[in-house]
Length: 179
Image 1 (cartoon, one colour):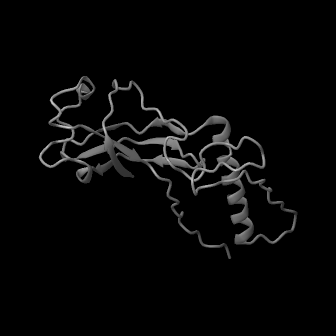
Image 2: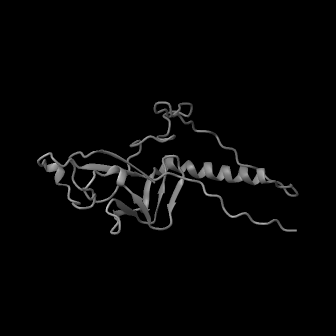
Image 3: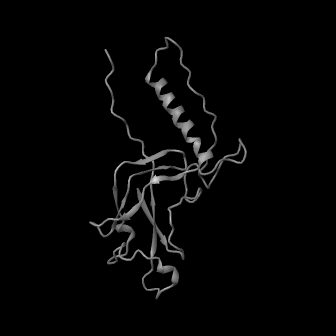
């Protein structure tokens, strides 16, 4: 997880956290208008690739490459669901102030789909240190109100912190072959 900051804008507190497709850079953001058109955003492009399902036959000697191809095909097929279902937070992932660390937040367990169709699962409550995004001497959770939208004296500029989740592949335990 990483955090970036940006100046606060007048807003009302959201009832639910929502993610808008195309809100931040990702390698795949929106489906192309036509099958041959890429979805380019600056230097970042992606194409709808036609994926081919691996075929197996009785008596075939399977190698790790064959099984890797099957896993890759399955991942690519599941990633196509982002075009029909969208991406963002599916459930959980609530963010709250960390009572033990004044410059930290806790992200609750939950599930999201990245803009590239990857499943992002947070299995346990995860602390995130926001010290680099905070002003010195001002606890980030001291005033959770949104009265910055009403104006104020301008002396204490409030900031919004964008907390981003990124997909990271984790290898499973290797199993010994039989024999």
